[in-house]
Image (tube, rainbow, N blue to C red; front, top):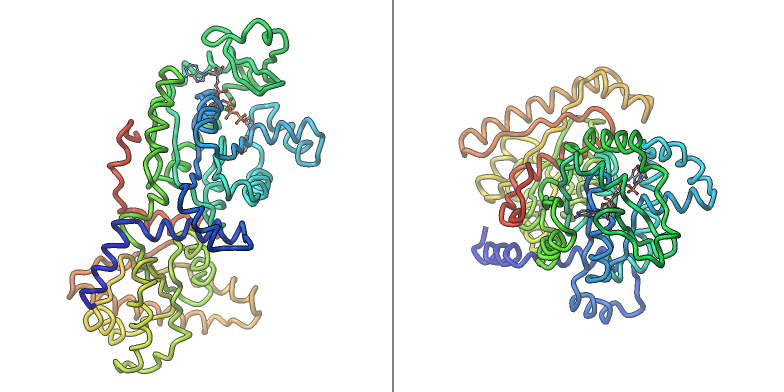
Length: 438
Ligand code: AP5
């Protein structure tokens, strides 16, 4: 690799150019302004924040969100408020959500996901940035959001001990006219609004307990989905002191923090019907990497000449700065050696999708109705021999081994596992300066 390429890559990583441009492109395609150039100049002047505030029931999400909106002018989307409005309006969504909410259960994932995606597509959100309050609440919600390319710049988790949460929820009062949140002991409503303040129907002891149980059941998988950018803030202090920490985090220029340390360079392969194509599309949306498909390039023999096009694509500037996802190549010891040793192209992650032959056969027959056991077994043998080839080359050059990724189950779950692997070694300790995640 030419040293000028290395300099360019270092510069891009140091200044987070990938994050900056991918944020801008993502928003530009939503806004579709008449004059894209003028729009881009405006965009670069004001950094857009895409914030998630998460935490237990009554941990102070609504209270902090009010302050964030006031300071940063982002669009506030509270799934709790949106669902309560749907219930009040008697819409089909509201009718379905009502029973779950009344008992303190979570509303089914797909209903909430559709609701949020629709709201985030709004032009205001791309212009001002957004603040999600109470979403995502499950790993499925988090993964579905990431698979659609909806990526936050900040994820803040408010940490409050359970024993204080009950008291906060039971004492909460809401002004239905202004939406302002009060507490009968710690922040009582002024005399002129006290009369109209209401208690939320789910702020009853048993329902709060249910909501807390739901929160704890989902906490670890949810944090895992955002582990590279999630920052935990001690929410057990006065709202103003909590906001000082929140504000500090939000004022850091941190667009796409989770991509800043390492531009992803991934090789993905697997037997036919293992899901390489589906997963590669989701990973491209999630990481903004360049997809390079070896099957579109003539690498039919092992000579260096037939490989030069692939090498050129992998070392071109946008692959260096955005990262790449290489699928369907390399396919033999000679090709792996050419890439790794001759061209010095060394991906950070080489991932093989692992799916049992019976499952591959089932998927294949659903798709084409022509897949035979023999063809599936042939595909598995080819992958097995490719894995051995990787071992041979990687052992010699001391490269990390191929990661075998469980490719069974729900598409989003496979995607989640892949994201975990890719982000597994991203270090963001510097951002965890407030309270380290437990
Ligand atoms: P939602 O409305 O989001 O409720 P929640 O998550 O339980 O959170 P809360 O609104 O109760 O509390 P908060 O953290 O905003 O605290 P607040 O600032 O008000 O969701 C309701 C229901 O909708 C869910 O149960 C579910 O059914 C459904 N739902 C919503 N999103 C969903 C999703 N994504 N998927 C599926 N279902 C979903 O503060 C609480 C009290 O504490 C106030 O009185 C306040 O004054 C006080 N307080 C705040 N900060 C402090 C502080 N620092 N010190 C002392 N007191 C404080």
